[in-house]
Amino acid sequence: MKGFDLRYQETRIHFGDRSVEKLKGYIQKMNHVILVTGKNSARLSGAMDDVEKLLKEEDVDLKVYDNIRPNPTTEIADDLADLLREEKPDCVIAIGGGSVIDTAKVASVIAIGGGCAEDYLRGRKIGGYLPLFVVNLTHGTGSEVDRYAVLTSGKIKMGISARYPTASFDDPRYMLSLPVKQSIYTSIDAFFHAYEALTSRHSNPFVRTLSLDSAEIIGENLPKNQDIEAKRNLLYASMIAGISLDMSPAHVVHAIEHALSGINPDLPHGCGLAMVGARSIYWIHRHSEASKEIIQKLTRERIDDAKSAEDIFKRFLEEVGFEERLSDYGFGRDDFREVEKIVFKDLRYLLRRAPFNLTRDMLIDILENSL
Ligand SMILES: [Fe+2]
Image (cartoon, rainbow, N blue to C red; front, side, top):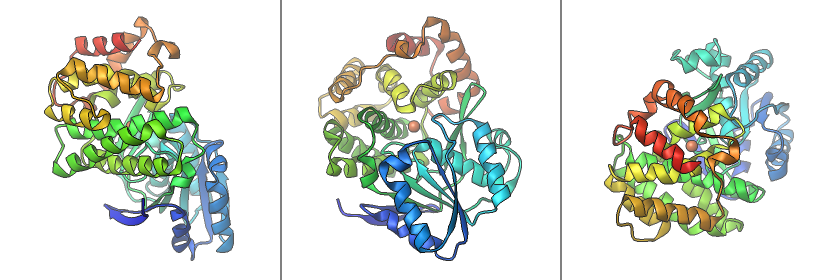
């Protein structure tokens, strides 16, 4: 796949092998930057070395903040924002997947607009932000092209409309070091961005084109996901699903997953989506014609009804090597009441975008079938 540059909303997207080198054009007149990452992936992927080299060549001073963990909390975003206020960098460079990018988005907002992450989750108006450059390390998040950030406050994981990155670099070479399990999780995340955007009440013809394309590419490439060409394709599928999601946000599957990984932060986002996804598809499928079309694109199989959509999606997951259940992460029937409370109270804003009204019985049915 050939590389390309694209402007979407406020973000300049640079896609392709060695696209990270285009970061140079943005940092040339800068003096001091903060690099935000997690613990390992920035080094393992080689992205950290590449970015450090570019900064050195341009004589830009840098400080590394590497405290981001999966399912990041509001406290981590506040901590990073404190550092940004202290250091007053010219920009923030986030190297990582969704957790790193989302935390950097919110911290870059706090650094200019004041307050704390909790304030913005509760609707505080955004009053500016530091320039943010994103070197994306997963083929699932979509956060490198969308305006959203997801943070956990207490046990509640919430998404907010934060900001678009200034520029993003989708360099497929960095996907090669993703462990196989993470590859599956992140591509399932990308698939559900495409699926939920398409089946949402907010869908439009452009979302349809991007979502169907994304699902077809994931279906073709996820089973062979370790070679570079497959990685390029999966990263492209994830990026266009991110645009779909930005235009037409997620609903039921993301709401249930956010409730679960808010309760257990060790549950990876894409893994949670895969676990509850099959049975969620059963219910969504009954109320959305587009569901059939997109599951057929993903699996290349004929779908007759909601049950066959669920079964065929389950089979697809098995074929790509996914077989985890909610019980593997310690969830049992005792947790259903808490999940229900979070989904219908704290996350009801997500449910409003669904093509039907999720009932308590449907939610319990989804959880039961995912145990
Ligand atoms: Fe997601």
